Amino acid sequence: MSMEKRMTIEGSNCTSFSNALHAQFHSRMRTIVSTVALEKIHVSAELMKEWNDLIEAEISINREATADIVTRQLLEKDGERDSLVTYLFDGIRHEGGAFDAETRAAAERLSYVTGPYAGLQKEAFDVETLHIVGLLEDLDKAEVKPDVTKLRLTETVERLRTVNAEYQQLRASRTEQRGAAHLPVAKKVRPQTDEAYYSVCAYIEASWLLGTAEDRALLAPLIDHVNQFVREMKTAYRQSQAQKKRGGDGVQRQPRSRGGHQPRG
Image (cartoon, rainbow, N blue to C red; front, top):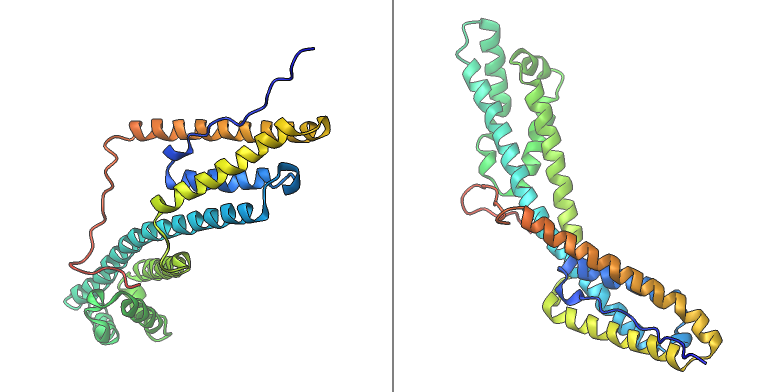
């Protein structure tokens, strides 16, 4: 009688994955393993909790990394609104010397409205946001709108409104993503997550090896599913590496920002 071929779980190579891919691998693998009752694979609740907690830590770390990306987007968005405010103020100042008397009068009235906001581009980021909101409210007043139209600044005002709202949304997003403070470093957590995963895999393999025919019938699809996902993630990793090579030098260009300023936390 021929011996049944032993079922094993393939090596994942997850130690080479990026932080995001590593967290994705373990998160999805946790879901797959959870389709079978823990007693069937002889994994203790304590081990499963340890693995779960480490996975959640990695997910939080990756959210923090995403917040750093949002920080760069905030700088870009702030630069855009600075340019719009400068264009608006310069336009009003320029039309103050127009030949047309009505245009000059409109520019003078708008200069009076915008005067209190002079230099807002150099203010602290959150203060600037609030002052732009105030500026837009003043420019929206019924007695002011005709002058904005007269100086052909309506499109600039509306674009400033949009960009400032986008800045506020990004700011709120970054605050939310920063979530938990004092997160552990990924390089310390990842080996622990891997070790917990390897232990779970060892228990699954042993449960199949020492199990009854009924146990093996239950565990065989689980091991197949785990191995299929391992292969999918290896493919995703290879594709990401190939994409990096095609992407050139891989150097990230930092957006320009006004001297010394960083978005306030």
